[in-house]
Length: 68
Image 1 (cartoon, rainbow, N blue to C red):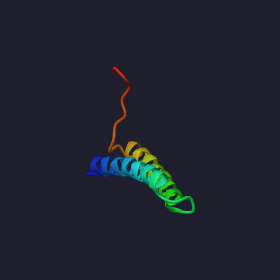
Image 2: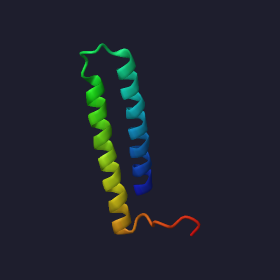
Image 3: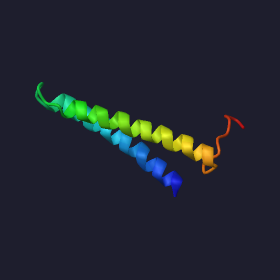
Image 4: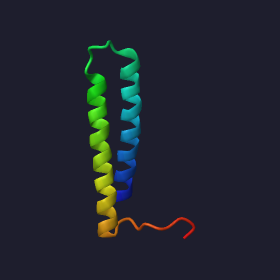
């Protein structure tokens, strides 16, 4: 269940990234929607990093090295 939460957060970050690109290309210059999308993306990214850290700390996610 925790891994699904992390996957949903990652998909949300990517979708807000493209939403911000859309706002940047289509909105007039005085629109604030691009800034709001950037703020939302940064917030979701921070939440994603905190969730991954919490998952590793509690043992829900086990990190492994490359070629392990």
